[in-house]
Length: 228
Image (cartoon, rainbow, N blue to C red; front, side, top):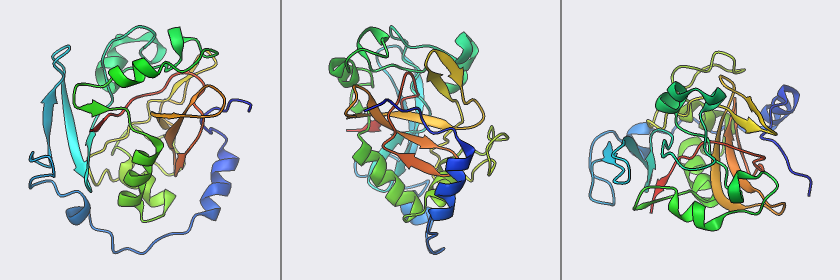
């Protein structure tokens, strides 16, 4: 199968929007992702943790029965990079990662790297993990899911602007690397999954004006770990 970029075509996004069925308005953040209380891991629903490998501190949030990092992974490993090679972008928005062996976009998937890149007790989410997240947030509506996932700033170039960030996921439009070029800052947030596609890439989740799943990632994207 021919490899695919995360979808950047506005006309395709408009068509997908038109096909989206909006759900009712009974969804409640206070029920799905309360800011206070204790989650199923016996921890506060929202808080911080330390990555023992490099001492970096990350925010996390509980959405349904899942616990997600509330910011992108910043762990510095070979073949990862900062948007436009600016270290300040890594500090603000996280690193961009390749799951291909030796960072080669034509190489095989490095399954060992996928299993080790997240902090201890966390993992790279599968597409099924993303599906649960979408079900919890959007009630079947790609538009509502995107709005509730998006950060409250940074989306000025997106068709529908910034989001409401109801559950503290704070998806920032960091873009990625596609065929050797940085692209998408201010337009979309792309997240790698651990689920392989049938063309030696992995699937992912793209957040635009809607949420798209199962798109093959051509080169580098962000990682948002989920608790095991």
